[in-house]
Amino acid sequence: MNTQKHIVLAGGTGLMGRILAEHFTRKGIPVIVLTRGKSVERNGVSYIQWDPERPRDLEQHLNGAQAVFGLNGAIVDRRYDAKGKWTILHSRLSSTLALGDALGRCSDPPEAWLQLSTATIYRHAEDRPMDQYTGDIGEGFSVEVARSWEAVANAFTLPRTRLVLLRSAMVMSPLGGVLPRLVQLTKAGLGGKHASGEQYVSWIHADDLCGAVDHILASRTEGIYDLAAPEPTRDGYLMEQLRARHRPWIALPQPEWMLEFGAFFLRTETELILKSRRVVPTRLLKEGYRFKHPGITEAILDLLVHGTPRTTPLTKE
Image 1: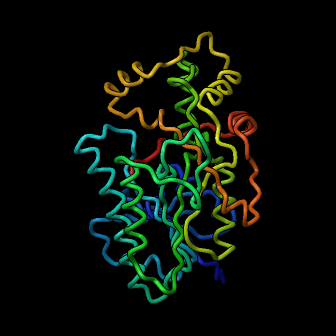
Image 2: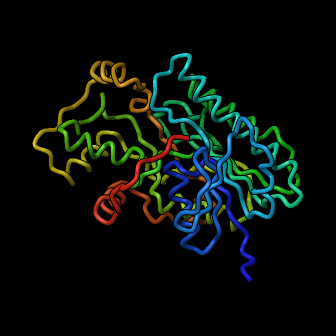
Image 3: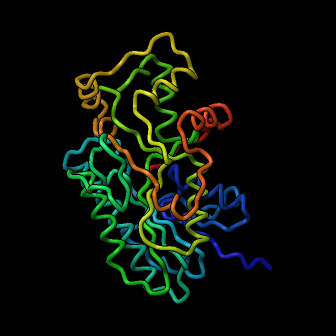
């Protein structure tokens, strides 16, 4: 009889959820993914349809779990107009409220609630690294989303479930997200630096995302963790590494005015590229976690040479 406690991934059809679902199933841990899509069984994962607006008996899926991950959130690659801001903020807060409320009703609650947040909560930083201990909280819409997101999770009193807030940098994976898009742009001749190229990019390899999560679950800790590689890279160097791998015949730099022009027509925001995120994982390092991929040069080589190309589209939560 299998007595292994299961893992619940709320909003688990995005990139991070797909990475974690594969990771846990490979370890023989049962996984339930809560999704807006249809309820199905696929590749050893149970997909359960749910609506954060009407969660209805959500606790039945949480009872007896080892951990629940709150990963819901509409993509931020959109214009920050009134509609876009509402979509980004509401998708995060409503799902977090639903999880917190359901956890409070559980008779056998999960041991841990790992709630996604974002490393963009810190200010634009080129002068020094940012972390949960000495980092400066920034200003603007994206920061207010992060602050509100964390505040909602912290508002619940759950004596039998420890809360962990994951301030995640962008996840590097060939399965989706930012890396395939940057590769596509590089191959198309747009692999030059963005604006000055001096802004920092915080990132984490998919392997270390899984490793850090395992560390947190095993450590039985709570509170904030910065999920980022120890060595943030500059934008210009990142693009240089992609060009070295793909060797495009041209690599046009993209000055700020061009990025603003393109962002308008692509219905997105330049903040996603221009904000300098220099986040470091101080707590993970202090607790003894050893990164498999601390630097971007080796990480890019591993991801693009040994990684598996994306074969299925990502689902928007």
